[in-house]
Amino acid sequence: MRKRFIFACVVSMFMVHANAQETYENTKMVDNDLNGTARYVGMGGAMEALGADISTIASNPAGIGLFRSSSASLSFGLVSQDAAPDFKYGNKTNMSFDQGGFVYSMRSGNRSFMNLAFNYKKSKNFDYILSAADALNGSSQNRLSFIKALGNTDGNGVTPVNIEKASWGYRGTNYYTSQLDNLYYNSLMMSGGGFYYSNASGYVFGRSDTGYIGEYDFNISGNINDRVYLGMTVGIHDVHYRGQSLYTEQILDGNDKANGDLTVSDERRITGTGYSISAGAILRPVEASPFRIGVYVSSPTWYDLTTTNYTIIANNTPNKGDYPGSAGATYDFKVYTPWKFGLSLGHTIGNNVALGATYEYADYSSLDSRVNDGTYEDGWGDTYTDSHSDDAMNRHTRETLKGVSTLKLGAEYKPYKAFAIRLGYNYVSPMFKSNGFKDGSVDSYGSNYSSATDYTNWKATNRFTLGFGYTLDKFSVDFAYQYSVTDGDFHPFMDAYTDYYVRDDNQNLQKVSLDNYAGAVKVSNKRNQLLLTLAYKF
Image 1: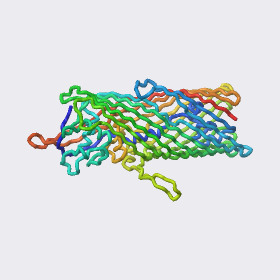
Image 2 (image 1 turned 180 degrees about the vertical axis):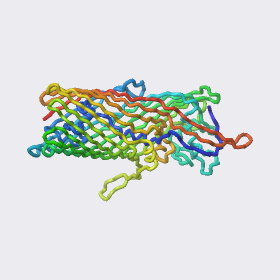
Image 3 (image 1 turned 30 degrees about the vertical axis):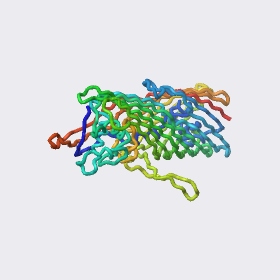
Image 4 (image 1 turned 45 degrees about the horizontal axis):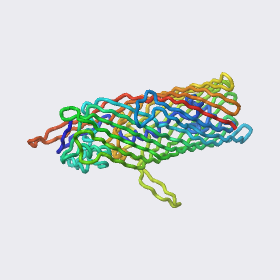
């Protein structure tokens, strides 16, 4: 349905079930995978007290202090999305280089060692295809842009909508309009001196996420009399994210008949680097017992990022706007992830059994989105970028995200000395509140530069792992299989409504109520991973 609007008086407007884009974009930086060596993955990552595996370098650095000899390892993987739809921009199955590192161990006393280590790990594999479709019953993405435009009066509350002001980044009375809103204004809604919106019967959505976060960790650790193990790690994080999506709505005419379709094609890239510091300790409370307790803390990862997008609206309807439907933008920003705390228990029984359990907690509602103020030069000739917290977006983050608990359990059994069998399990509690939403009304650059309206509230993650390993003299080969599943609720856009007045043919004010709702669609991320690690001790 194509509605014309010339004169309006906004009397009320507020949002229900909505969300700020940058909060959702930034969660990509904090949600790490279970990855590393095949032994670590096979035991569900529950090795923060057992130690002696290079993958503990980033979680509990003290685990490197349990090495008694030098070693080097390489890990390769195959990741496949279970029951994924076909999408032209993404592949369901991908090869992956997951880990490479070494430990150099030096004896510093009769029962003490000092170790140095370096490790590369793919902490996040972005490869994922998301697909969703549902009826809209008259709602539409461009109708949301229309509702937002109703709030962009000149402040008097009774003036006509000013299309020149209702553009990307302009702050109206109630809303910041977005880059996507501006595309709709130009390519569909503004034509012939009028202002229109179109209803839709349904939508089809597809997105392919690709890329990774690579983590480079440098560690120093050691032990005191084989009872106390201490370690510290400095990490450098390298971000390479690319998301490509197609969102198509089936448009209706004034008689609710099919009237063509609109497709929004969006490509967004996020690149940059970050750094972090981790410290930990492992204690053996009883000298005669192998039982160990591990504690550790990880600082925020301080990210300096750049996001770039290019967005096109393909208008395959008879109703054409006055301007082309394409736009792009690039801007720099910072994100500081939350602190992480962990407690771990480990025990071995003879030379045949190893048991581990780990609990981690991070408060993701404290995620800090930051706005860059500018680049400056210090007294030594070096440059730095100053920034400040984006209070509006951070307030939205606190309303959307919550604390996350991670439970890791793992076991290893050696039926004979050279062969090991492993099992593991992970539970990661939900990061998103059930009523979270992407709020396009947030007074933030994250809203201004938004080029997509969709969001997904992911629920808990369950990971199941198994593996085995074989050792021959100084060489070892390990295999692991991981199955992870996360369900979520997908929304094509935030819900909104408003009341406004228009003048009829007799110039009398008539109240009009306008809403825009879309139900949630159940989606799932089911992933299979095969992992091979080759290691050598020297």
